[in-house]
Each structure stands twice: as structure tokens, then as C-alpha cells.
Length: 92
Figure 1 (tube, rainbow, N blue to C red):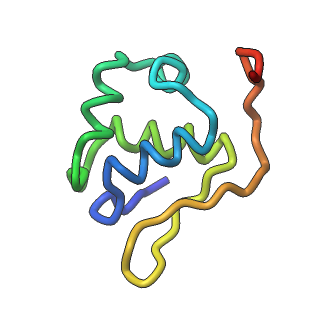
Figure 2: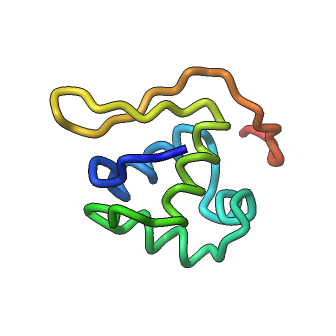
Figure 3: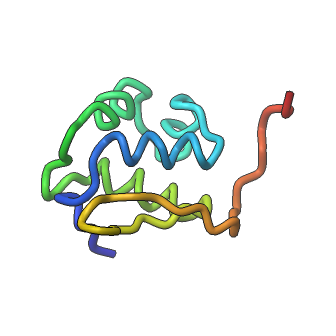
């Protein structure tokens, strides 16, 4: 699968992660990365064109029901509701 990261930034990935209900730690565990790496990627204003870590995050979020969209030339996210996620923590 090929992603167009030039249009995806860290703020979009962070918003998608939060919308999917994942903490930074849960995302890191889900993709097999260090938590600091996830935080670093989420802080980028524009992701590099070829970033394996970004691909892994995007793919994991898509599996959680997140769709990445470009609307009016700006990146956005949409939650489709089709998720494979099993909540590990109790809702408060």
C-alpha cells in the first residue's frame, strides 16, 4: 500500500489516534515501536515523503476504522466505525 505522506502531517495522525481511542503507549505497542518515536512523528508539521514509521501508523489507524481524506486541499480524518479494536481499558 502506498501513502501520500506529503499531505499527511503529525497533527492529523495524532487526531486520528485520539479519535480511534488509542493512547500513545497503545499505538506504540500496536505497531511495535517505541512510544517516543510515535510522539516524534506526531510532532512533525509535514511527514517526509518516505517514512516507514508513518506507513505503519497510518495502516494501524486504518485498521481501527480511520479514513484519511483530503478535502479542499487540506488533510483530514473520518471515523468509519468499522473497527477491529478491542478496548483494553474500561470506559469512565
